[in-house]
Length: 218
Ligand SMILES: [Zn+2]
Image (cartoon, rainbow, N blue to C red; front, side, top):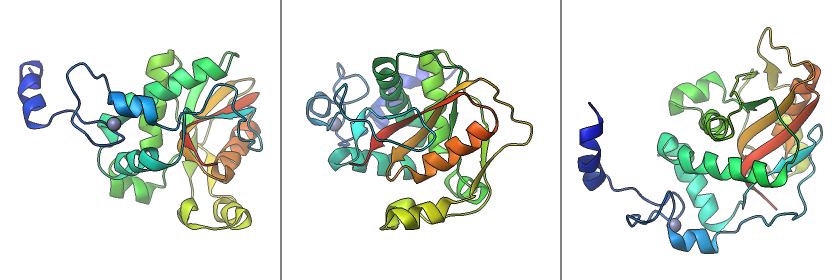
């Protein structure tokens, strides 16, 4: 019964480009043609960030300009809508830059407190969309045990590592023997959070962890 309403809703809430916010033309799919051309895409083979415990750390975009703005809007306003495009871009990046097979997709979780406040977990939505596009199951494996400060507000690598040390653990009963896991988050800054989560997954038996984010800081 929702379907007949769709054209009407499109008039009232026209689809917008998740990066620059411009209303999309009918022929534009998911994002506008300008952003498609000018966004800071990570080129194939461009040096990948090293993260402890991860075989690779992949991202389709660099974290600056409109990408930074798009991520901010995604986190605080338009989670569900924008995860469709963002997750698809991440799945394309995985297919392009990671030749080996994987068994499942999982994500860096929010704390319960943050999840209640925001109403959705932005990394989970991305992971579920990556799962949809790749055909891999999206499985919750991690929990955040304590609140941490935003990594982006902390200046030094050491401060970021200390901030997330021991903050994550595997959910009770999670067993990943021999599994090749794609670990999803929205942005990779220092990589400290991804490294913490990868260590938990490895401790639960994961054979390989590949980190996949929408954007990556230089
Ligand atoms: Zn745009």
